[in-house]
Amino acid sequence: MTGLQIDGLGFRYGPRVALEDVSFAVAPGQFCALLGPNGAGKSTLFALLTRLMVSRQGRIRVAGFDLAQAPRAALARIGVVFQQPTLDLDLTVRRNLRYFAGLHGLSGRAAAMAIDAALDRLGMLERAGETVRVLNGGHRRRMEIARALIHAPAVLLLDEPTVGLDAASRRAITAHVHDLAAGGMAVLWATHLVDEIGPADQVVVLHRGRVLAQGTAAAIAAGQPLADAFMAMTAGEDA
Amino acid sequence: MSAYATALAAIVSREAMRFVQQRGRFLAALVRPLVWLVVFAAGFRAALGLSIIPPYQTYITYEVYILPGLCGMIQLFNGMQSSLSLVYDQEMGSMRLLLTSPLPRWWLLFSKLLAGVAVSILQVAVFLGIAALTGITVPPWGYLAVLPALLASGLMLGALGLVLSSTIRQLENFAGVMNFVIFPMFFLSSALYPLWRMAESSPLLRDICALNPFTHAVELIRFALYGQLNLTALAWVVGCGALFMAAALWGYDPARAMQRRRPG
Image (cartoon, rainbow over all chains, first blue to last red; front, side, top):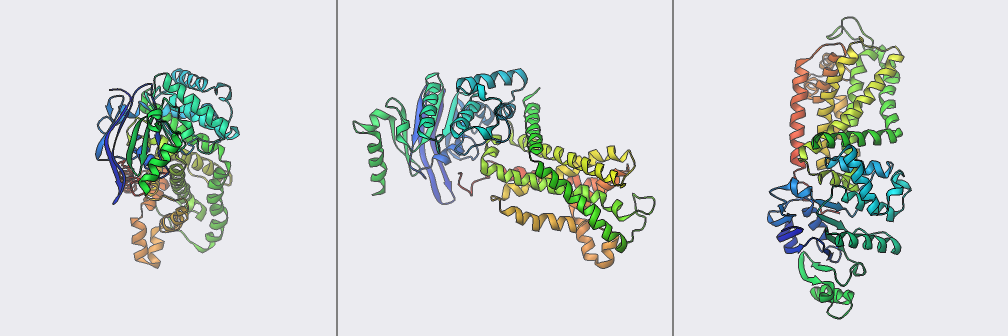
C-alpha cells in the first residue's frame, strides 16, 4: 500500500478524548480534504502524523512504512506545511530552503537542484534571493509548500494552509496543491472552509475526534451544497 | 557527506546566520561581561584581597580573577538564551520543523546544542580580545587551551537550557529562568569570589557553591586559561552535562513531550 493509511487511531489528553478510532486512507494522486470545525481534532491528528506526539492506539503508515516501527523511513516520505509559519524571516528564501534540505540530508548540488525545482514548481524561483520578511503572506505560504517538496515526499500534509490569506492567494494555493495531487502525490489538506474543496476531491469529515463521513465531495454533499451538508452533519451532532 | 553531518552543518549555519542578524543580541552578550569587568571589578579591587591560589603563580588583580567567571557567564546566558530561542521556536513552529527531520531526535537536539556552543565560543573569543586590549591578559597558549574547556562547559550549560526548554512552555517564563537559574548559578559559584573567601563568611554557602556545576565550569575554564587541566572540574562538567542531556532527551521524547499541551 502506498500513500497514507490510518487505522483505528486514537488519542487522549489525560481523560479528554481527542481522537477516537480514526481510519481513512489517501491514495497517491488523491487530494483528500480533512474537513472539520475548530477543535475537531485536526491539529492533534497532524501532530501524530508528523510524530510530534505518539499514540499507542492505532497505526499510521506512510508509503507502506509504519510510523511507529520505522519512523525515519516514514518521516523521510512526508512533506509538511504547518499551520503556523515556520520561516526565518531575516534569511533569504533560498537560505530557508537550504536549511530544510540539510535537515533531510541534502547538500551541495543535489540540494540546489531540488530547491530550484521545488521553487519553480510553485512559481517562486525569481524570489529565491529575497528575504522572507519582504514576501507577502501568499508567497510565504507558497514558499513553505515548495520547501515541503524538496525531498520529493510521497505524502504531503497541509494543516489549514490558507489561514490568514486573501481570496486570490487562497485560490492560487488551493489550485497549486490540486496540481501536485494530480501529479501523483497523496495530499491531505486540513481545513474548515468548504470552498477549497472540488466536487471530485476526497473528503473526510472529522468532528469531535471521530470520522463522521468519508467519500467524494459530491457523494457527501448528496445534491445539496457541500457547506450545507457539512453544517447539517456537525450541527446534528450538537443537538 | 552523511545525512548526519549535513543536518549538523545546516543547523549550525542557521544558528550562526541568525546570530549575525541579531546584532542587538551580540552586543548585549558582550556588554554584560564587559560592564562587570570594567565597573564591578574596579569597585571590588579595593575591597577584596586575593592570595595566591592555583592556577595563579603570583598575586593577581581582581579583574584577572573574574575573567574566567565572566567567560562562564557568557556561556551561561547563551545556554539559557538558546533555550529561550527553543521555547520561541516551539511556539513559532520551527522546532516542529526540526523534529520532523528523518534523523534520530538525539542527534537533532545535540546538533542544536552544538550550534549554540559554537556561538558562545565566538562571544567569549571577542570578549577575551577586548579584555586583552584593556590589558587583562592570560598566557598566550591559554587562549588555545581554553577552547576544549569552553566546548565542555558550553555543552553542559546548553544541555541545562535544553532541559528547561522542554519543561517551559511559555516565553514569559524566561524571567523566571533569570531569577531562579541564572542568578543563583552565577552568584553561588566561584565566578566572583574564590571558595575559600566564601567559607570565611559561611561554610554552608561554600558547600552550596562547591556543588554548583557552574563553579566547576568556571574552574575548568580558569585552569585551562593557564594551560592546566583541572580533572575534578572536568569530571563534574562532563558528568553534569551527560545528566542534563539525558534529561533533555527524556523531555523531548515524542511519546511523552507535548502531551500535556494541545498542539496549536
